[in-house]
Image (tube, rainbow, N blue to C red; front, side, top):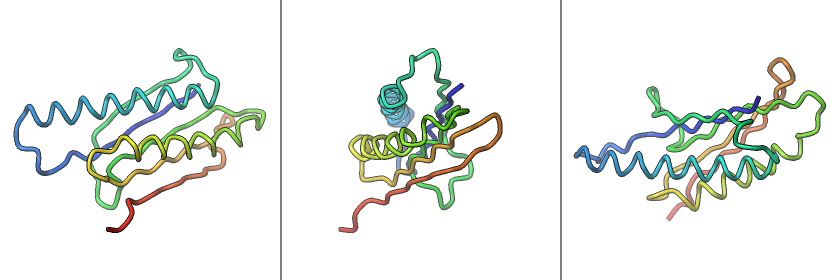
Length: 127
């Protein structure tokens, strides 16, 4: 089973219910595009991916958007795919951010137990 989670920080400057809903709709759109990218890199069908989107509750020190993934890899076949997926998901997230927010992607290969972890993080360029 493959699982992906997109967590996000709710911007503090959103005051109205409509602004919050528009932001959440954009996050869902981002999640759909990230899922499609992951399915393509890992050659998966939609039925093989569990996907979840959540707002951060304890967000101190975390990036604005963070994709976490767990990919079943019992035979070490997806090691290169994991790095490629992280790079492509980060590039996609950078293109889809709304105001230069920070992004991160961490995907863990799982072999019936917790496997090795490889995480990448990128901050927006300084102005």
